[in-house]
Image (tube, rainbow, N blue to C red; front, side, top):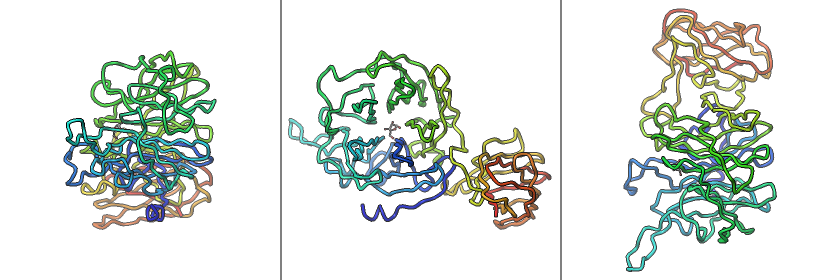
Length: 442
Ligand code: FUB
């Protein structure tokens, strides 16, 4: 744990995915003061001792945080299958967690396979999925796991919802809502304290429920395998125990057939955000996923507007950092495309390829603290041609890219650029081909 805390590091990830050095999925976001904490599950490549190479494989959890939605700190590992007392140390099934604050402490709820238990016939059977709790004084930990999992609860994907009166509920796929006892270490067993949401679709898997409240309405949101891949859908109610009304889908299937999605929704500094996942760093294997975030909006009648996932994400990008143009806001209809920098290491990221005169890529919300004097563009070979850089619609630089077999940094003088937050556009003004890794202003 101590080592994990030391290993914490901050990096600027204004775009999607927001976690770029490891796989991460099932993000549960929590606002604590002026910071957002994200508790994802942690996909890994299956080790030899885990029999299912084609399945989800997770052995621990990390927590990440940010106060500006751009610079994310990895606080390191908080709970793992080897030290949580009741967890099967060969289970690799630490699936979607949740974390909430209670009486000044942080309660981290996590599902995992329990240690195999002797059964009635004396054989050791599988322990099954249970829900454990680890408690910390600070959201970043250190977390101390409880000796035993929650009684009377089995399954995956726990969500804790705290109502305005402070009453907490455990929401589980099914979908059931059960009152938590005041200790937050047990759930009520009174049938009157439990409600099953019958209004969710009955055809197709429903999992990962996330309950939140907005403008007095309860929103029961959930991934739903409507056909094959999961969409995000929701029901609404005026009371916690319903009746709920099925409202439909607010996030369609991922275009590349990533089977799962799993999400959480928070309000932070006046804006509502959706955290979800996608297999952006693992295009051939959809069980290695990455956390993304986008803004979410409500219609005047309280319904959720359809979310269109973006690459640009939610963070403001500083002009003097490496601006990853490949996480664009808009792309011209022809003449450019995005590709991975390295096929053998997807974590190296992407490049923007311009191959037609007039093609452009736009990247919004760049913060210029000062009017810049020059721009540096990192170019990947083979490239040759000329690019114009525009701030909003004004050309502020022209970058000549010589034919070169090396990775180079092309520099150009900037004139007429303004301070403040602006949209950026990069436009190909010659024939040829130019591959841009990133650009930055000085
Ligand atoms: O990450 C493993 C499982 O995949 C989660 O628990 C589900 O919600 C789905 O995202």
